[in-house]
Amino acid sequence: MSNTKSNMRENVFPIDKSYLYFNLNVLSVMGIWNPWEEGYKHWIYKIYEWYVIIVIMVMRLTAILVRGISAEDTTQFLQEFSLLAVEAADTIKYIAYIFHRQQVLELCSAFNWDRHLAGTEEITQFRNKVLTNSLSASKTFTIAIVIAVILYYCFYYYAALGYSEYKLEKLPIRTVPLKYCFILTNFWVAFICDYITFTWLGLIAVTHDAFIMALMINITAQLEILNFRLEKCHIEIFELSDDYKNHEQSKLIHFESVEREMHDKSVALDPNAELINCIRFHQHIIKMLNTFRTIYDKALLPQLLISLLLVSMSALQMILGQQGNLSDSVGALVFLIACILQLLAFCWGGNIILVESEKTSYSLYASHWYYRDTTFRNNVKIFLGAIKNPLIVSAGGLVDLSAETFKNILTKGYSASTVLKNTA
Image 1 (tube, one colour):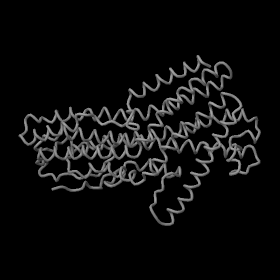
Image 2 (tube, one colour):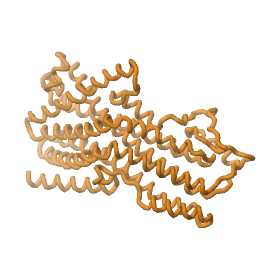
Image 3 (tube, one colour):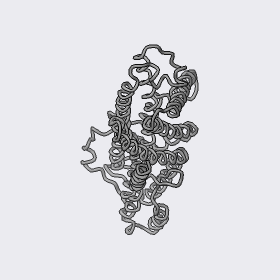
Image 4 (cartoon, one colour):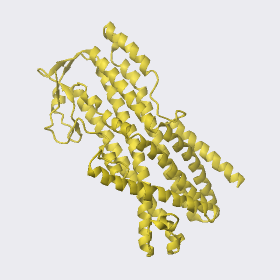
């Protein structure tokens, strides 16, 4: 017999609420996620969404391209080319995200599957700990990169203020076709509008990256819960000790879930049924990962290639800046750090999934399968075949997102910048 955990506690996370709610709300504010499926609110948001796509994204990207073509020197060309490359990679990811809206919705709701599996108080408390940490990590990451982007564009426009010499026509917003969207005659009004729209474009990019990162963090959290379930699946009788009853984890979010009904502080468990649930859970995680690949697999390959290109170009720009204007070198350094951090986020997200999935076989061995009956041991043999290979997040099916890939891209980027320096 099972029942749904009571909602009487404070700070309870409803059983059908998505773990990605925070990131989806942020994307809605940015104008790239319509939270309404129908009705007048849906169409009002559509107007806002199309304004963001046409004015903030398309017009801004075209203006960067025009400025790059009409660059007066190599330094300005490299700056505009680097910005265009970054935004091109982000646009590819955005297109994949929009065209797979249904898969995004399915993936966001799929994380709740484990909470509908009957469990014990021990599993509930472990889940609370893991999911609280994962939600906190994804929120912290999102907020941190939003602040970082705002500060970066403050630095970028401080430099642009010097280049413009307080002349309206030298501002980026006065570049074709943006100048036809903003009819401005006052320099400071134009400067503020320029800063807001360009920062907005940057925020769209990084909040979407934060959403991708949140997906990988939550997939890792599901693997942690699976591994814990595997380690405990051999237990035949679970007894609720005073530690469990009295240990109220006040700082944790209590995730509403299905729990087995207790009889006299204990509940009888079927190890074979528990193992089968773990196998089903693992299959569900693979399904989630496949959905993630469907959405972003091809979109992440250009991201890695462009990251390699940007590391090379930024390093070269730093070298050229040292020979000329020091401020150009500092600007290139800031841009290089931003590119490396973005690359690190993707590779780290893929790496934590890889590492946690490798632990699954060890958790299965820790289930004391050698003390169980023949049916249990046969199920273990079958499951071992399914988990012998770790789960990998790849880009285009060609490059794995891992710590090794991060190291290789930095190494090849440095080598490329050295070759370009010698030939310059």
